[in-house]
Length: 530
Image (cartoon, rainbow, N blue to C red; front, top):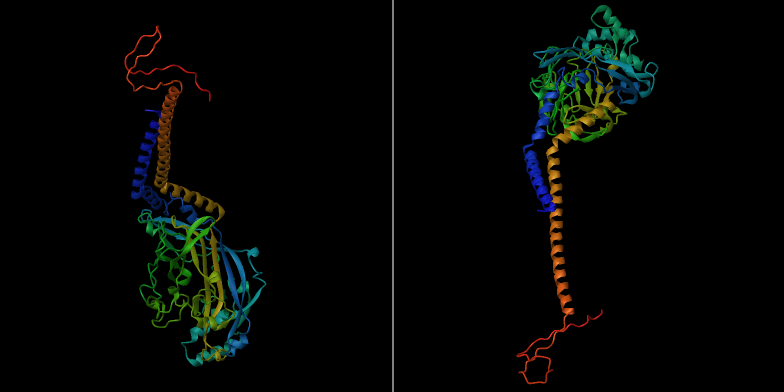
């Protein structure tokens, strides 16, 4: 057996083994199952886990962009006309949110933690100076007091209204952005505080929220079930709330939005509990996106999250009291926030009933600027980019006994909205790309084996064809040489014709013997020159 034949046989054997093993591994999904099993064990909130430290101290910077609606025609609105607002901002703050007092519970299957948030102003990302810029907005303390007195007698409301007028308090107030956001001493609340000390005399949309937390959380670590990774077990000791009018609405579902279980698919709904909204919301898959070279799934709240209960009956539980419902796109959260009739929505009433959008001039909802979304790496469940957008509104309407409101048309009035953004940092993105490359290579190793087997198969075909061609050439050369030898003999030999006649006596030389029969005489001749 020649070396060429040995090479062909060896290539064929290796090729067959590679194809058989590779196809078997692809069908059985051995490596993919092994990787998935590894991810389920590694991505947990345990001290040995690689993701635990980043969960305690999230590396991506979080920015809070605050936009305010400056009222440009308060007199027109108070006289019964349509309000007009102009958006100003953003006023951007860097948010720091380390986990504190982390304690493992129940043999490491659960985790207690606080999540205090601290805000630092970032002037280079802001449109102005919050301590200098002035805005005109709704006097929320005044509206809160009117709302509290709405159930009292008309005479009492009238007396309180007269007293408020003597203080010079109006329906709209003019303050700096910093005061409206972080608090100021309100003259009306100061009077109430003197009579009821439990009422704070300071007011601000973010008053007492810088350096504080949203409650005590207990999370599942994912040690028992990877699908429970990061899910909230209790909030402030509660497994469900009591503010809403149905058990389903009171459920605390999902995570706090910081982590999600690995191996996410496009068909599932992801749940987030938003303490500032006093409820859980769900996100649905929208599209595939790419962030810093990392493939991700984009999830966003679908239209039915804030849909009117007539169109989505499951939202009936968010009507308090039962049956007292607002339209599509808005949610009254005053049930969990005592005082003013606060309503939340997406910015500029995005996805809301056109009734609310058209009630105020200066609103322009659009998906690019006002949609809330979350981009998740599906293999690890890590948020790559997040954008949470929410708007704070207040219900303004006529209240008998308060003459300043007698001409007001009931309006859900926009106050401000916040754009909370976070994107994975470059260092974490580089580590993520490396991890995903390793996962991809290991998961597709059987495919690589099959690919190598196919390449060897092609090599085998080429070797076989060349070997066959070589044999044909050898046979052709042998035949040519034989034919050449034959023609050479013909050229070197002269043939004499055979006589068919009977022998006749003839004169023969004396020295030549007589021969009987026909014969062929061959005599050498000189070869002809070509």
